[in-house]
Image 1 (cartoon, rainbow, N blue to C red):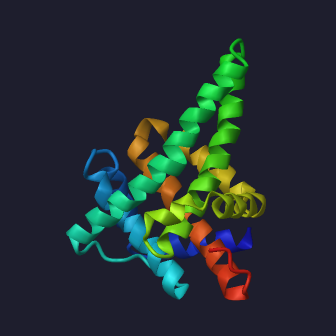
Image 2: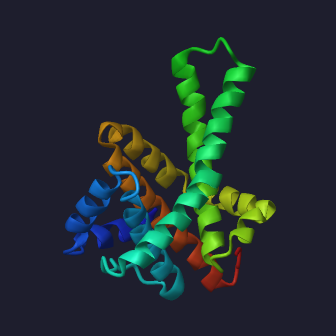
Image 3: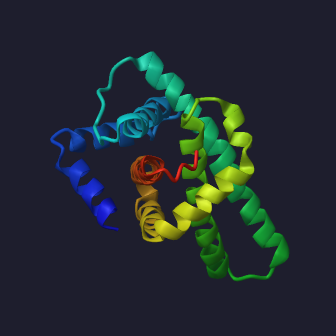
Length: 199
């Protein structure tokens, strides 16, 4: 938890954070333009993974931002959207008479687990930027379990942010991905440095 607080404080205290957060969130409101915001998050996580320092990169090289944004979107679709959709369908099939609030509780817990899975898959993918890395389901699942156990509070916080900012969905998407990807990259990078390599 202290690591998360340190990371969050370092981010917020950066003089460029507020403008970066506003720009990324506004881009997430617009389909296609959201690729640039996702590309920025991709670049930020990549810098953290490579050199272990949390920095706010420049909004430069739009073509690269676009490509990286598409990469993150693909990972998000495969390890985010699909599992959440399947979870909702399964919950509805298994318990068709479940009250709406109960479904939200089950689905909320499932979304938290899926977010852990997404972060793990993203870290694994960034290792070589090869989509075949996403087929290593066993390793990604093991990473997700580790991250879930060690960072449950952060995942719950991300879910709370998503719910709180739902009407302003651009801010919801950008803030959740920012917090989740930065924390997960920092977590797995720390394991790699300590020799407990997971990806």
